[in-house]
Image 1 (cartoon, rainbow, N blue to C red):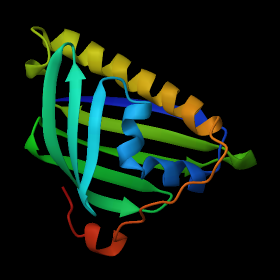
Image 2 (image 1 turned 180 degrees about the vertical axis):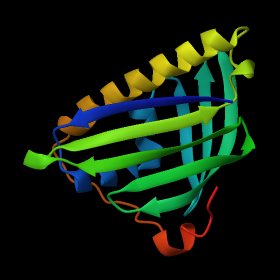
Image 3 (image 1 turned 30 degrees about the horizontal axis):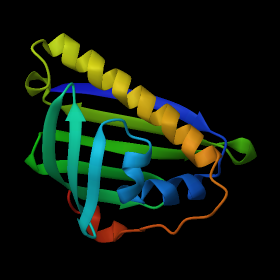
Image 4 (image 1 turned 90 degrees about the horizontal axis):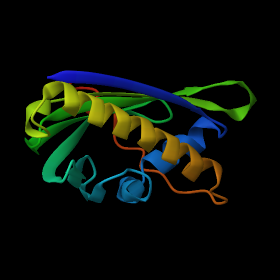
Length: 156
């Protein structure tokens, strides 16, 4: 398993950033290679992505969610991954986003090093595209606030 951590600062308040991030089905608008993200239950998502010409699918369970603070997930079927996104409010209505993801790289490319570099570049680009997407969006979006108390029971 390999872990990648990426971060970015966006010029948007934390509640707006969090609300947009919870619109999981919008992920293909800014995540390269993400074909479909479907919210099949309040805390379960189905992903279809293309990485390095390979198609991957998995179901992910959101096991921790605190509005405007964190969303954590783990795959429960399909491609192995686990991660979290932290939302940190900054002065002047800005937000620091920190994304950490652990995944099993050997199925992506021939070389583990190549896979890690590829996913690292992809996550960096996804955060940059999210920054453009959220900073240029002129409307508020609803959010999915989850059931944070019950989800916190599922420590990984």
